[in-house]
Length: 271
Image 1 (tube, rainbow, N blue to C red):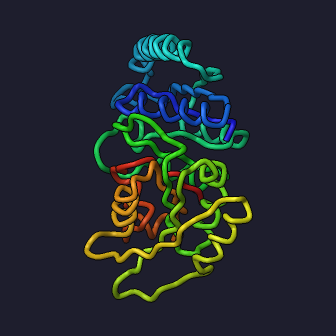
Image 2: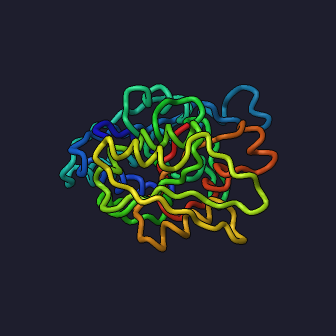
């Protein structure tokens, strides 16, 4: 993971994202592309002639430039390679365009201008429409330890396989890899591929893994996986995303939606 795309926005999770990107860059001798995007699409009720937008844009540009100077000053003191790209447009669109030529996208758990425990639409869009894995970093995360143990959520699905493949560079640096399945209560167990095939795949890359089956209990699957990861002192979680359609996840509540709602540790996801 040598090419790291970092979303820059002035929100509560920016410092955590920057630190995670720096830790990745150091671990892989990689390069960080800091992408800052500002949109002209400002809507004010009754602003038929665009006067509110015209008045707001200079302030928005000034704030964006102040943020850039602050972050660049901080990054200048770090031992990592980086560059800065400033673009106009919706952040998710600009990140989507740039993600095609990067190994991983580092994002926060919330959409721009939002806070609190709710899944990010931007993260969902990138997962569904980009072929690049996404690392979702909690707002209060202090560091990303690539040498720490890692837990892979496994159900044998295509999405789980995609996430496992995407995570190989990181898993190769982990001190321990757990391939974890959750034994769901009152549900028919379904494995497109059994856990042993995931373990065999990792072994071909020189990565030893331990297959563990975790009883679900009263918690949902993401909380069960997070609890198992924390018990094993894991530095991050790997998961496939959107095994069902996104509409079904929104209406019924799916594993991906729950996992992206107030994550408790970094999650590497792919679809």
